[in-house]
View 1 (tube, one colour):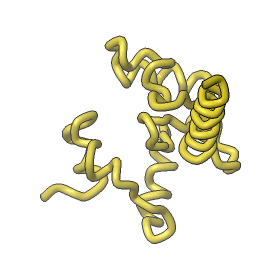
View 2: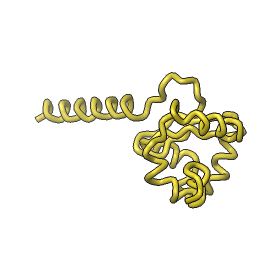
View 3: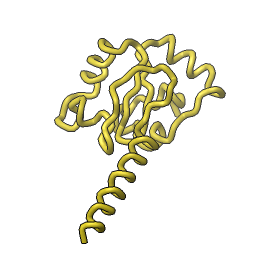
View 4: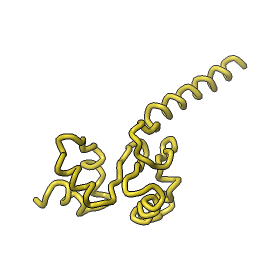
Length: 122
C-alpha cells in the first residue's frame, strides 16, 4: 500500500515536471518577461483574473521590461510589441514571422478592432 502511494506521488511529480518544461519554459531568445505559472501563465500573477484591464497590465510590464516582452495567456506565449517601428518591421516581413493561432482564435475578444491592423479592412 505504501509503495503505491509513493509511486503515485512520483508519477504526479514527473508529469508536473514534464508539463512545466514542455509548455512553460521560455526559449532562450532573450525576450524578457515574467516566469509563467503552470496552467495560468501570467493571468493570475499580473491581475488579469482579478479584473485588471489588460492595457494597465501591459503598461506596467512595459515600464518593467521595455518595449518588447513576453506574455503568457495560459499555455500560449505571446510577444508584445509596444513601438510602431517594431510592428511595422514585423508586418512588412511577415514571411519570416509566424502568425500564431491565438491571433485568429482569440484576438478579437481582447481588441475587437485590432484585427484591422493585422489583416486590413474588409
